[in-house]
Amino acid sequence: MKMILAMVRKELIDAARDKRSVMAGLYYAMGTPLIMCGLFMVLIGQLSSPEDLNINIKNANNAPDLVRYLSNNGINHADDEQANKITLTISDDYAANMAKAKPAEVLLVADNSDEKIQKSIRRLERQLQAYSAEMGSLRLIARGINPGITQPIKINVEDKATADSKGGMILGIAIFTMMYSVFISGMNLAIDTSAGERERNSLALLLSHPMSTRQLVLGKIIAVTCFALLGLILILLVSKVAYPFVPWQEIGFTVNISQDFMGLMFLVGIPVALMAATLQLYVSFMAKTFKEAQSYLTMVLFVPLALSMAASYNIAPEILQWLPVSGQQQALMDFIKGREIPMMQLIVSSVTTLIIAVALAAGLEKSLKSEKVVFGL
Image (cartoon, rainbow, N blue to C red):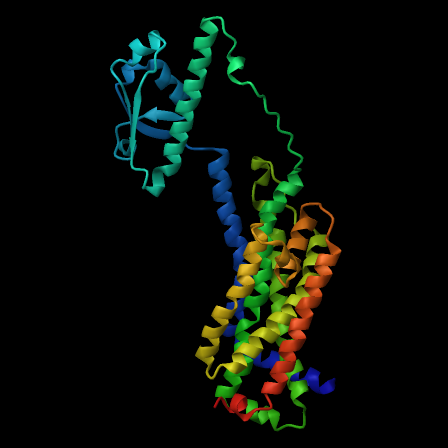
């Protein structure tokens, strides 16, 4: 144990000397919550207070009531270049057809392939449909007909979701970033302590010391795991401080990163961090150069990324609920939504994660007994 701890201390000291490389992985943990909060604040601002929409309305005098209705809903006439991208032309016989209770035509002209105005087009279409429905009801009332007969089925929806459970949908995306930080934070150290040491010819020197290969492997795994968990702690702390500044109440959400959630996230992250450390070290030692290790790890990390995304957006088949990363993330999402934690699912996925970590560590120990791996032949 003393030899393993000495090995861990050596790796941590080496990492501290190369601050730029180590911080590159931790920047993700510190910056991602801030970026996400900024994006959420912009999105909520657009959803809660939509800006006035200016369009070009031709023959507006033919339908003053329609123009007034659109203006009351924030859609106004203008002649500038931006407004001309959406043109609403009112037909000359609009007033006559409305008086005769016939369909009155309007023409909406816009480029639907322009992503910048697609939202505005949908908004204008919704308001025109709402005005059409209102005029249809008035026509029925004028003829002594109850407009309700056109709705044979009245659908009442009772939403059982609470403000906390709605906020859980947002935190599901946050959990995705937290889980992925475990893989990102220790990646640079894993590459440097494996392929990097081999390029510096210090790996063979380490193996010449009176220590077993297993002690060497365990020391490196523990050091990389420490940095992975450090990244997880940082992203939890930054999220705890940053997320309350987002005005969630404006869209009926409550997002609260509680201490219970932080504690559960850390406990769940321990086996994931161990698996991430062993996986990154194993792949890095299999690579012959530092750059090759970076390329391999970039591709390998797509696997946990895909599992995490599938769990975040609830598009995963049931089998993924029992697998590493996706299983733990699904359990965390149930917790923040106020549901009962699926303990069996969490235990199975965590045990599977540890089994994979042990298997990779054993494979790494065996590979380091080969001269081809030690000298990169």
